[in-house]
Length: 297
Image 1 (cartoon, rainbow, N blue to C red):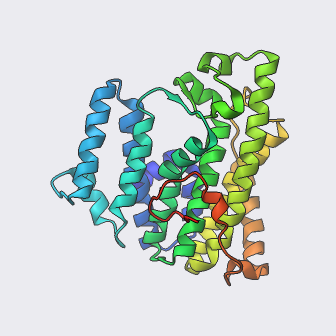
Image 2: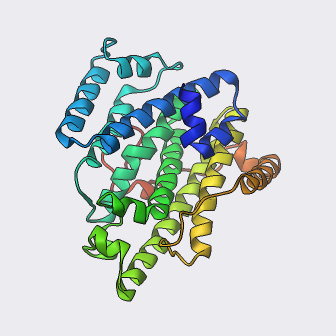
């Protein structure tokens, strides 16, 4: 069932997962399915109090390893085992979506991105049995980069749900209605914010790719492909001059195949994907709390 969900909703990750072993595919698909169900509790439940209660109960079940809770039981059964504290962080991020979202500054945005996506990078490290602290720092960066790309692509879709992830420090106190129907000055402010956020995403894609050397070879290729395809979405937005009022940006299957071939050539050609070079830049985690995997300096 989880693999069907991955194929239907996570097209990029499903495409990249084909390069993994069957055991890795099963574990990744199950993790995706669990994260999808957690998202749906927040997004599809019209009763915000009920959604909050349901997620609070799940958090408690994860903390106490309560096998009687069906979703907690599934999470605890993933092998290799994922860190439940990290999954709790993800739930904390999703719970922010239950209420009105109007982020105020970049630190709030990065903390949100860490919770809903950086944590996924950490849990993928668990699945691939990678526990080096440096590797996990880079995994957080790749997750945050992907989430920044998501936010940049879905500005109008989020506004339709009453959410503004673009921080007020970049766009002012724009309402969702103003985002959907901006005047020229407001539109320019939004476009400039997207230009800045996608630059921040690029810095984190570069850092995320540096951490590939820690992964098993098949996982190395799959994660590189997923990252490159996601980064392509940002490139499409850039080529549209950051006009998010056009139809939703996406990568075609042909473009995914071309990106995969380029990724394969890069994996063969560049030593940095096989031998770790350099160090993690702690400045990329500025604004994040003392949370699992964060590079605090």
